[in-house]
Amino acid sequence: MSFPHPMTNAFHEAFRHHPAGVAVITADPGDRPVAMTVSSLISVSAAPPVVAFSLSMKSTSSEPLLRAETMVIHLLRFTDIDLAQLCASSGAERFPPGGAWARLPTGEPRYTGVSTWFRARRLGILPIEGATLVAAELLDGEVQPDEVPPEAHSLVYLDRRWHRLHKELDGVAELLESSRFL
Image 1 (cartoon, rainbow, N blue to C red):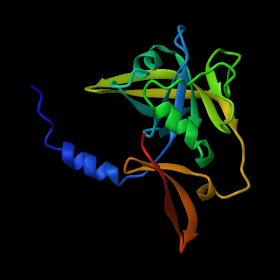
Image 2: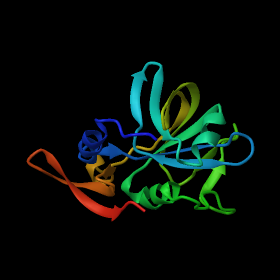
Image 3: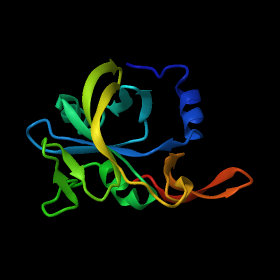
Image 4: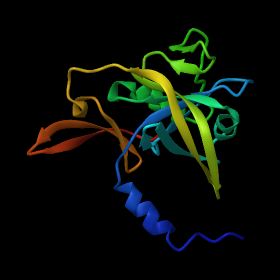
């Protein structure tokens, strides 16, 4: 019988109040495309450009993502909230025929409606009980500049809910609740 770590409750409470950006990772290890929503994406290095993220081993998408050598990392905006929810929903059809996705010339699946994305190569993994930390080098991608300030379209995950930043009030961006996690 496994007992929770003594810091588990403190961890849950602390990260419930720690907002995170939202990304979708897609890949095809050779048998089918897979996708997963993550809120753990971090920048590691700018030169070379390296990111890291964690995959929960409870997700059926984790094992196929770990088998893929390359992937696409989609940085989501508020307008992409439906995609975030889709890729966070267990058993959902994430790549329907005729859907808003296409394969890159190198074969990876990419959601075509997402304006900021990067193709990445897995550098290494660190298995941890219940999760795996993945480091990946960005190879190419696209960032479409926006004429509106970032707080007008940012998608943030906080306290098991999706939010967007609203207007700035005395130097502080306000959060607007969008929906509960599915």
